[in-house]
Length: 428
Image (cartoon, rainbow, N blue to C red):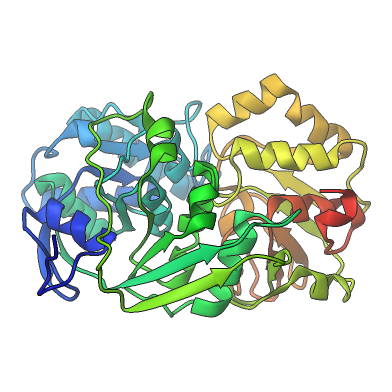
């Protein structure tokens, strides 16, 4: 049935209407949304002060709050150790039992994804901008600031402005060696880093339907780099099958109406598309990888990790390419799984041996080199080829360092050759 003044609702609009108890909402409308899941990582330590300052004494629903230590694991600085202590103390005081501490940790978004904390129809918020990733579960998932999170913890509600929606329809078949990471980089090249500022991005079309849940997580993750409030995929049987055994609370599937009104519709045809690469110094500085390969860009560091591309599927793909090869002399290759569960799976499958015997460093689960605050920091003028999501100046340390964003397979290919390379050269 049509709503919103004679037209249907987008996925984001319908979920936010549900969260606010309204029949329908329109872009620009301010709503008070009831939150289904709140997530904090180290940044969440900054919520504790405001939480008490506003007079709050207890969290609205301890069963709907997840805390994950992920940026500095174990703590690598005194400051990080203090943040961890604040969160541990707060969790103990508030009886927040869903605490993924050192030894059972992981990148916060992956923790939510692999443990079924966000389900179709949810309004989920987190103290990290890449919370968008969970929109692949058919939810509105968005990053918020620490004072906003303090209000959510106290009330279970949050004022939100309903975003307009960009619809991205993807058609065609991804070719050999072309991945979901290449697809989202191509879309970023068109939308740009400010093209979806405070907007919802709704992905659909035959190609999206054909993607696995891990691939959909990758797509929605990098919606953040478009400036979006949320990125999302409507739930389908793949969503339900993925969540069936792990969902922490009841699903309430919502789908966009056929007559939904979108601010913009983008059609993408991936037939014949080459692997893509985002060159310094922006995720939207996207070019075909084949063009950059011709420039013979030497690599100092390779990084296979981050919430974008460090799931077991990514690491298996990288290990398959790595077998029988060595890391090129002069290249530091860092592999960091997205969660402890993924680390353990890599251990069982012998994937850690594949990388370490080839000369790579396989680390514990963490954000690792991605954010330039823990391990894998670059020197000025060094080059890193990375499966992560951002390559702005200073992202991995000094602003002079250059970061190129590619698929996991392209990271491994480049680590082997010592320069930016096309994984299809290795039969991928």
